[in-house]
Length: 165
Length: 326
Image 1 (cartoon, rainbow over the protein chains, first blue to last red):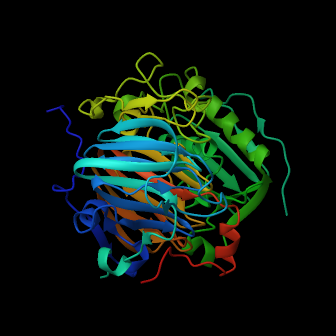
Image 2 (image 1 turned 180 degrees about the vertical axis):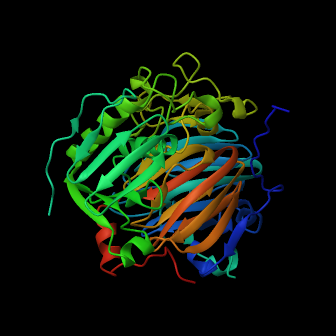
């Protein structure tokens, strides 16, 4: 008694809550679980689990090595399960317009100056800075929650992931 | 019409507390209760939940939309002016035409509420703290706790931990790990930075940062992507206010569990109960009010869209009250 256990979700160990209706439509709450979403996703698929106008939070199943991406605005990667290595690169020439939204895939290996490498563990958050390129690597299946803006590779499949009744 | 009046504290009453007026509203406290009067009625409430609600309202700058202190009293933020109301969002008061509302300049109502907190919060009582981590709000006037009631809400400009931004928390800076988060890993990420990129290559332990929060139900801005604000908070016991949304808000449960009672924003009629466990993501529509219950201290990510245009768009029906339709 008095020893507390903090319960975090994991890709292979999570318990889902839900919406109990009194006088409403369950769809209004767009209720999902990021670990369930990631468990059914392809590696590096950017599945929106929250959306507010143009802004999204994406649940990403990190597994293996991602493609290089460039982001026109700051993004923030929160590791909610597993471990992640992030490489950052300052491109030799601008690869994205700062007025765009959402990150873009970069074809091949971009030319530029290495900025650094970040080793993230459970609960760690990293800045993915505007105008820069990044590539992620996860030795074991991991889950990232990404704060970003809806872009060309954001996947919306609300009917598949959300409580409907 | 905007009401303008001075927040006047009277001489202390027999319990040691000053009384205050704001427009047609008056506020008085005794050992156990706050007594609020307005031209069409009066209200009595226990002083502890009242001070906890008042504290959030002030610290959040009246937040997004409606802050219901209880089923009768609350405020509506118009981002420059603020409504103080009695019964405005209570169906019975509305039907009986006993509801009352006055609009005040932001600074005036904030200064009045700050003056009430400064006088009515006794030494040892922290309105932000969990019930088991603070002294009593009740009794005769007994000193003050100005360091607690004047806390600044954390609002990172880009991300916590970056140079010239909000600092990380540590034992040395006065933020020990909370008693319910002693099992949370405190290791920091390994960051290898090439020279010249120190302001951009940055990471921190988000969960450890939250585990050291000394307040409950107080979202703070930790990362910013244009108008997208990550506002995590640690929650224990009951959200001291009932938040009425003026825009869609999102909850991402990061640890443990919270149960939300969701009622209609206008009438207060029950609509749903949302149980959130670690990893769950749920929207709060723009036409509801909600109150959370957290049996153990938990980590909640409140995710906000700070766009100033949203409340007007939703109020005019030009934007939906739900985030997506499917």
